[in-house]
Length: 361
Image 1 (cartoon, rainbow, N blue to C red):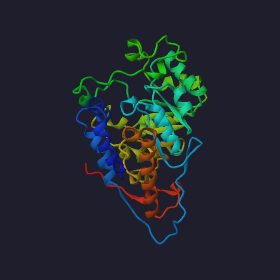
Image 2: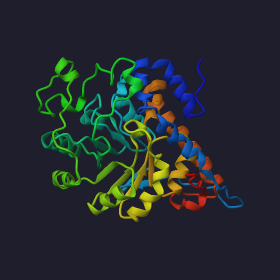
Image 3: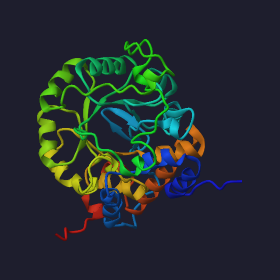
Image 4: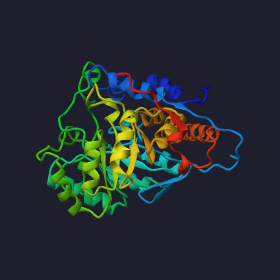
């Protein structure tokens, strides 16, 4: 009889036993020396909370909205490719788990299952994450996402050059093989690729157009959906993003998987909040493992946070139920910390809730 995990770290330890070493290296790995992987955690841990007492906190409300969509608490599921590495139902299970927790899932371009299949399985809101490879491919994906009921397009901007994960390479290849790119096979994609064939298994849509600020204008013409830029790391880019009319700025260092030696996302957040000045919603990912991390990010200006690697841990525990369990663990912790900080709503969190360390350089 296995004991239900009390926190995400126990969930991670269980998953490590059941996901193949090759897939585990790909899921857990970061860029180069993985310094920023560690920094994502150490910077969050360096921020401390300022608890407030002698206040009525009996009735607490964790709900919030993202781009007008209500979610039950401010934690969403980040996009990540290859969910079948952790469970045979892959993204279908993740969507069911997120929906059961009444929160939002962002589906990756490189999902095993198609966006239509995931939409059919989901009871919660969905965004679609886009890698802008070329006009024909991006137009095809964006229009399908809109038709399938996705609520926003999250464009990943922090992969201008492919950055192999050294830990994963040492286990055999840069990325585990053997799964179909669900959004590129079948009649909906119109690419002539058939599932479970070698052409499909090794298909990668070529990057033929650099993603630039100018390309955002083209993308805006392809869809009426809100556009979120994922991977913003500086005030300069955040300012440019809102000047170009995006509805969401997603502070992310890709889980430290693309470039080592950068600041953590929580360290980047204050300058980005200052640059945006309320003209777009702000989200944050990379390193969220505790409810206290969520409270810290919201207090410093994020509207909501997203979790990536933990979705694989939940899938390995028990598919959709495991994803829901992972989210419910975080919900319980968010609620506990919210109350201890003297707040009854995540909407009232502010910088006075936290102490931020002064830079030592």
